[in-house]
Length: 339
Image (cartoon, rainbow, N blue to C red):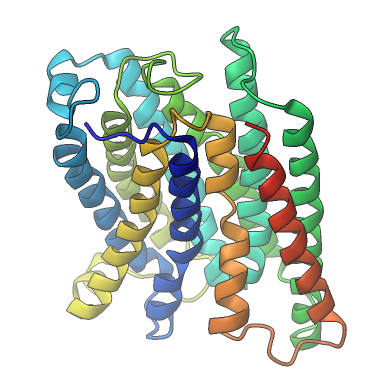
């Protein structure tokens, strides 16, 4: 298989992952403009996720001279390791359903700062503890890591405040439903990365306790998403958080372009996941997760400069946005150099 061994290339992989994880929701916004509900969008997103993971496994995971190939892992079939990867997919899927619902109800302004931000900080802590509980010493400067985390927490709070000012200027109140959905998303998503890491062979990533190679772990993660989507999304379809109920008849009535946009969303997100785990061995899991999950700032860039979400925002909001960007960059630099 093909892995990244150089630290700076591994950091670049994390940056690419960050961009992907902060950009996939643009596809949801694109189809929402055509009155395509998030529940219908989610079926296509799942298809894109699984196809991308499978393609990566049989290509990048089966090429090169590094370690075992995907097919060698499949032949061995270590079910104890596989269950952690699948569980990671189920946990992520549970949280991501809430995140897409939060975006549908209250927009990216609530979904990413609250859901993504909470998952980001919680995930760093969870992956740090994962390393500690295996009896291994954290391979880096802990002081820089935690200062970076603190700076990012402040940035997330400023981000939320800026979006709150925008919401107040338009509707007077930020929807409580959207906030609750985002919080649920963050609480679930923060655990998925560590579960996938546990499925991996420690020779490929610090904190791993399993036997899988990175590509095999990502494949079974995607399988967990695939098998749980019919359960989670069917419940969401029967209990819509906004709008009317939708059925599979509505899904199959969608245009080819609409379906392809959803699949593209899955390709973008899973492409980031694959790239992240390519370099997870060179940058430990806490660092990989921290940098990869800087997606709220990427989503902010899309929202501010492409979707113009802050157009007409109250006076003083721009200074908050500038401060948020500066703090995010400072936090990312501190985390990067903590390894």
